[in-house]
Length: 385
Image (cartoon, rainbow, N blue to C red; front, side, top):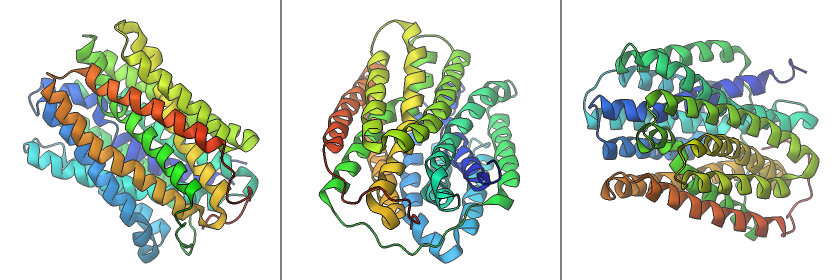
């Protein structure tokens, strides 16, 4: 079984590097960089939004780049970009310098996320595609966990050493994954604007809007919002990552048994609960909030990948790219908006997490509407693209 899942494990290494580390390790670094004077709170939020802008570019260009380079070479390119950006961020060249490299980090993560999941599912036996998708998405949680463990350790040597240490981890992941990259033929046509597809994209977009606040501000909520310190903020980010691993893998198993749409409703209910807990004043509630948010973040992504396969058959890869692009567009636009809101409200965490709570509730309503619709295709175990 392990041998057949090697492409999925390699895909997990890609998402761990490009998203869990290069993108999300910035979350526990957020308060440290503000405290060290590299950026202020508003600029740190803008760096998070710049990463999302790059992620959008990477997702939208991933399929075309994959056709030109082939999936394995495209994954190598994404890992190389990721490594370079981490090295560059080790120098405090000012906000503009950091914004450029954080944008490029997002591009690398977007390239990896666009193709690692569908390619991994296409490279394993049909009865293990749900599990393979869960493994790849759980890689994001693994990267988050690695960042949460090592960022506090590296920070004892300073912020430059932290960026360099993260680069070393990415290099190791790349070396382990390179020989086992998944592959697939990018031949499928894009999915048309079916009403059901639009509803799936709406649901995933609302999920993205709801998850933005914890994906950028969670550690800062604990460290500065509740006065718990950078170490506790990083520990909560570790909880987020570990719960994400569980959410990704478990959701793959559940959707293999129950189907994607009922599972999507359940996971969005958990997300709504998570965002609601962040709004309560008790500091200890940030712990279950972090766990529930991580569980939902990776779980909803895995379920969406499965629903795309259930509905689109051979066109699932194209639908997945559309969904990932919607996610990136929503988080990019909202990322800059929340950064502005955070600065305008005197760095109010309640304001940004309140927006996330409302978006999560709307996503739950959309998921329930999606559950009641009839899929345009019966569930099939076709080639994904």
